[in-house]
Structure formats: C-alpha cells, structure tokens
Image (cartoon, rainbow, N blue to C red; front, top):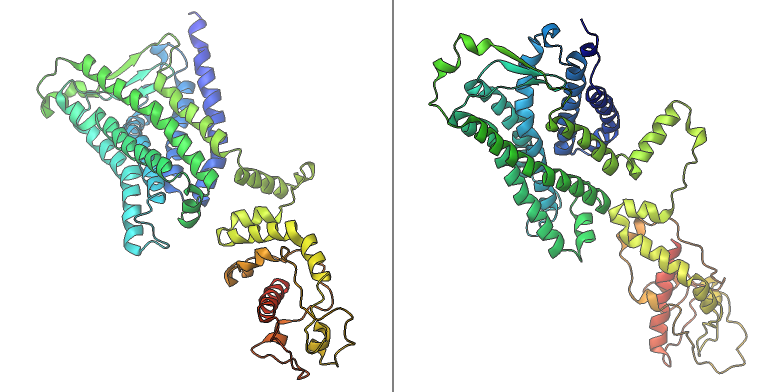
Length: 462
C-alpha cells in the first residue's frame, strides 16, 4: 500500500492552522462585544467559532482521499449537518440584527433617552428570533427534505444532503438568501441615515444611550457591511447552483425520501480541494480581529491580562489626558470646551484682572476693603471713572450650566489677584459686610457687569 494517501493534503494543513488562529484572535472581539451587551455581534462571532472548530475537526479526521479507511462519522456528522444548516441562516440573521440596531441608533424620530420595558422586550425578542430561533427551526425542518443521511468529503468533512424536489427550495436553501435581502434593506437604511445626518452624526451617537461611540459604530458597520457585501452574492450563487443541479424536480414524498436508502453515507474524494465556503469563517475571524482586536478597548484588555501575569513591565501605560476622559463621558462634553477656553485665555485673563483698578467714584475703596469691611483706602490720584477691559472676559458672556461644572475636573488655576471679591459681597445687596455704601450712579452698566463677571469667576474657582 502506498503511503502517499496517508499524508494530509496541503490545504488540510492550511485550513487547520488558519482556523485555529482565527479562533484565538476572535476571542478578544467576542469578549468586548459580550461586555458591551452586543448580543448580535457576539452571536455572529460564536457561529464563526463553531464553523472554525468544524474545519479543524474535519480536516484532522479526513485529511486525504483514503476513503477505504475513513471513519463513517456516525454521531458527529449527524449533529454537524444540523448545526451547519442552522448556521447558514444564523449568520445573515445576526447581520440583520446588527444593521437594525445601528439604524435604530440613527432614527431621530423615535429616539428615546431610556427605552421602555416593552421596547427592550421587543428588541430582545427580534434578536433571539434571528440569532437562535430561525436557525433552530431550519435545523429541525432539515429532516423534511434531507435526501440522505449525509455526505463525507475529504478535508471539508460532513455535508448535508438535499432532496431533489421543490420542498428543498421552499424550506431549505432559499431562506439564507431571503434573510440576506432583509439585511440589505437595513444596511441601506443605515447608509441613508448616515448621509442624511452626517453633520449631526456625533451628537446623535452621544445622545442615543446605546453604548456606542463614533469609532465603535463605524467599525461595527464597516465589518457588517463587508460581510453582507460578500455573503449576499454567495447565497445567491448557492441558490442558483442547487436549483441547476436538482432540476428536473420530482414530486415530494415523505415515504420515498425516508426509506431504507436514506441511511446511506456517501464518501467523496476531493483530490486535496476544499469547499470555498469553508474559508468564510476563517476570513471572518481575521476581519473581526482587524476591526475590533486592535482598538483602544482591546489594548486595555491585553494590558490587564499582562498585568495579571506580571508581564506589563515591558509596556508603558499611557497617561490618560483629561480631554480623553471627557470624550469617554458624554455628559461632560462641554467640559473639554471649558478647559480649552481656559488654556487659551488664562494668561490674557490674569493680565486683564491685574490691570483692573476696580474702584468706584463715591467710596474710592478697593474690592479687598469692601470684602474685609475695612475703611476705604486713600483716594486715587486718577479721576474716578470705572474702567474695564473689553476682551479678556468676553467668553464669559455665555455661562455654562451647573451640570457641566459638576462634571469638570479642577480647572487650570488662574493668576487671580488678591483683590478679587467673592460672591457673598454682591449677594442681593448694594452694601458690603462693613456696611459701606457703594455709589453706582455714574457707572451702573459697569457695576452690573462687575457683578456678573465676579459671579462667573467665583463659580470657576469653586
């Protein structure tokens, strides 16, 4: 007996190796999607992991064309063909749910801050139906049009059998294409809304309360779009191929299909070739890693794993800037703008405050005298017209809400002179704590402006 058939084909080794790598690199995206409660995306990766596991198992058991010494695959193939039948409908079904959720995020007419209990149940029900329910139904209905027990192909392994009747089309291989068309509708809806709301895209994502940011949204959409773009013509070709091979159709008969010949197991050599659809889960695993295994969240997870094993000494932990922390918290979006304005105008503001004399005509007293209740200082040599710089505090004319102040970390410390008065000096009275009267008759506008600016300045310091 020649030893050549015993050696595995190169494609058997290649698909085993690449499938194993695809399983390993698909685990980080799976963990991230599960952590973010993205059930459709996690289900999509799980289905691909199962198919990759089948690739490894089948190529290991049937690596060559030595069909005389092949194992019959009883038990394994009985389960595998049912799971494969369900996976053909599950993969496009998960893409339907992903596109539907992305379209709901961009739906401004039905946007809600917190979904109701009924809306959550409806969304979870649709996800369970497309990700698990329909695949389970298709796997159970496979018994109706299953022409024989199964086929065994070299390297590719277990393959389901179909009856050459119209029932196979109606209950079997037409439904993956139908689900793909539903996914194409939602994909087109996402593209339409992306184009329509392109100028408000960032604001819509932040206010959607969906657990997505712009980067995660675009990466998830790009991955799903590429998969749907490849899956739709593939399913259309499979429908065309099955119809052309099964014509002419015969009339359906349960008794005729499930007779003694139904238990036949057909073994087919392939001369080292692998079915093209066996490469789809391998490519999908690498794509999942490219889109979600190299992001910021994934790198943080890798660093935490290395830290657990004490191997993080080789990697520097990047110091997170305050601007980055603001970007992660949508409720603090105005805080970054405040810090930017502070950084841009701090030097100019300090100079403007230092140059302000802050005196009134009648009392000729400084702000420090008013706050402490001390007697007014010696009158100034200059005439007592209140002066105020025009530009340094122009950005304070638009006050920020109190909620944004609560979410802002400590602002940059400004070089405020010691004669800056606190808010209590102006709280609802025209008198200081020392009961010193302030004459506001010549400069009423400037007096009001002083109150507003000092009130804003006190809020910043608090």
